[in-house]
Length: 303
Ligand SMILES: NC(=O)c1ccc[n+]([C@@H]2O[C@H](COP(=O)([O-])OP(=O)(O)OC[C@H]3O[C@@H](n4cnc5c(N)ncnc54)[C@H](O)[C@@H]3O)[C@@H](O)[C@H]2O)c1
Image (cartoon, rainbow, N blue to C red; front, side, top):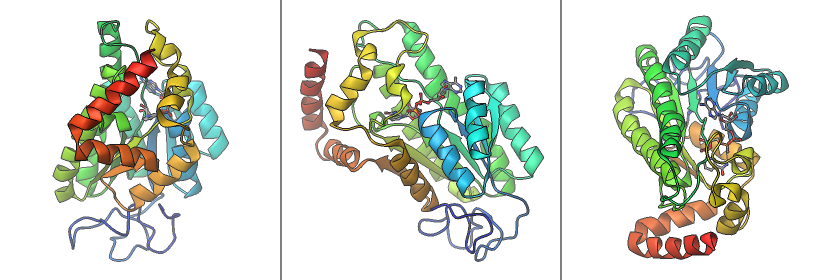
């Protein structure tokens, strides 16, 4: 788990899978061999108003971090902040200047930037022939550029301070072929690739990078697919399709616990629930067979 501030060995991401020997670990007072760093640890969570982001804010705040819940929905971000003793910020992750101001603001005010959870995202569904370029562009803007903006703002600061952990939310759809939501699938694959490559690069600087790949999780995302975009049969029935595809939706609280444990262990990929890890393994074992099975499932979903 990400330990509470002030607890012995309380470095976020401490334990297994740390950086190279002798490399300073993400700092915290009292950690073994960790240079003393002053002040309360900080975390920014985008998409903090709802679902997974809201649960992450709660878990991080519980562990004593100073948390900023940032969301396009400023009122929702403020509600999360009030509920869990965080700060709230109205931020659109498609706006690079707004993201940069958020990230710099936290570093300037608190003297450190420990975690950035690039989690905001939208669901977009439909058969590829019925999707417009607006569906594609909006998904790329939020799900991919939103993450890029977070990385671009936070990574140089983390390099400079010699620690920090970037945690990007992708999806199981970033590891497996997921038909009927191609813009979503494409952006989530990009987030997985970006995160793993950045992890390899960032290691030399003492900066950590993880990527979260949840299966279908019980959040409001499934009730408002294609936000501000033309609806399709798939987007209108996203929740039902998710239940049919996965059997049961994963609980957001269980996922938040998985993320906390995965981040504490500095895992490269955090994939949950277990059924998602199984599907991912199947795709790696036999991509061609997996595509055939997934294609049958997609045909059933389309009706
Ligand atoms: N729920 C699932 O089944 C599931 C599965 C895999 C991955 N994910 C991913 O998890 C992340 C969180 O999704 P969730 O399920 O909690 O959904 P959610 O809809 O409950 O929360 C997403 C939040 O992101 C915010 N947001 C959307 N566009 C934004 C923007 N431009 N700038 C800032 N904030 C913005 C929304 O206002 C919302 O509060 C997303 O990246 C999503 O793709 C979700």
